Image 1 (cartoon, helix red, strand yellow):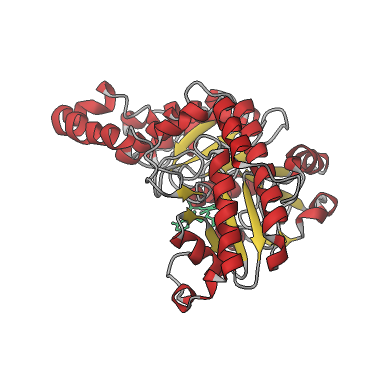
Image 2: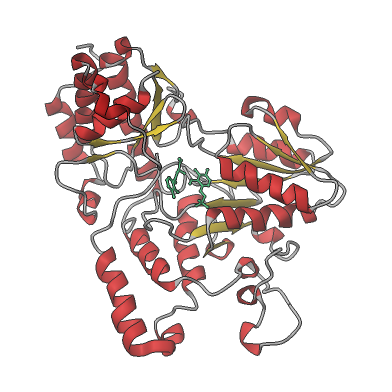
Length: 414
Ligand SMILES: Cc1ncc(COP(=O)(O)O)c(C=O)c1O
Ligand SMILES: Nc1c(O)cccc1C(=O)C[C@H](N)C(=O)O
């Protein structure tokens, strides 16, 4: 073993001293599974089943329609948004929970393009998570004279010019785990008079974020990854206070109206971020997301960030000490300030290796064509989880276990 790879005793002592260690008990993690996929679907919080059951049985079942007021259903989008705000460096009145990430992207991107009528380009990164590029192209198609231009992330700041309406970027890349310089790129966009929209799907709840400190205009993100809201959880969106009165939602539904219960024929947008609501909030899904947000109670963003970085350091050290000789290359930047909370490694047989690892109780995921991703959720991933995952990955490789033909079969959802 190299000196970079600690003994199991040492990492167990790190867990014992971890200020977030107690948070793990807030999750119903399956016994015998090391779950390293919270960057795709966060684990189930123990309290969620009862929370959703209460929303169904007592609130919906007994209090029926009175629940909109009595149980604060109507306030859920703003209430949950306010709870996400401290995790992303925003004010409570700048964040709202609604719709899906893709739909929120559509709303904010179309609004931002409309606010820069004399500029034609949406500037984006090639290889971004597909929905971002698909939605950007959809918005461009709807708005005459607009187009999407893709430029590699490293060149994006230099590519922003007087024709750039909006810069659309994902803060932590879904495949590589690379984290972009939010402050620097945002400043470059603003110097050229462009707006910026950040996708925080792989950031919120696990990495350092200071939207207002970076003067970010717009952001969106998922509720089902590090926020633990459950499959298909409602997503969030952020609109900087200074822009809230000037942007309009292209999906001008009644929930974004200034006075929805006046039932007037004329649309008048709500004064703040609420104008980006569209229809009736999905209360059962919101109750699960609220339970997911409860798992952050008593923690600080600084604690989450510090642990995420240490988990990543340990995982990278383990891969380099024990697995690299089997042909893996590290895809994710080694610098903790340049990566998010998952670590990706490439191997020509990444699919089979991922399946062999799952068979040994370590759940990561595969991203085509050759990437094995291992997600680190500071609330429930332990240092021992990472140590054991590396140990099992090394065993899968040392024994050639991934060569079993059973592991070659591809699933529909990866
Ligand atoms: C960067 C990014 N944006 C958006 C999404 C998803 O959008 P939606 O929740 O609308 O499917 C994901 C993952 O699914 C993602 O990784
Ligand atoms: N949203 C997902 C789904 O419905 C099925 C499978 C995976 C997902 C994901 O979230 C993928 C994820 N954003 C990724 O980074 O790959």
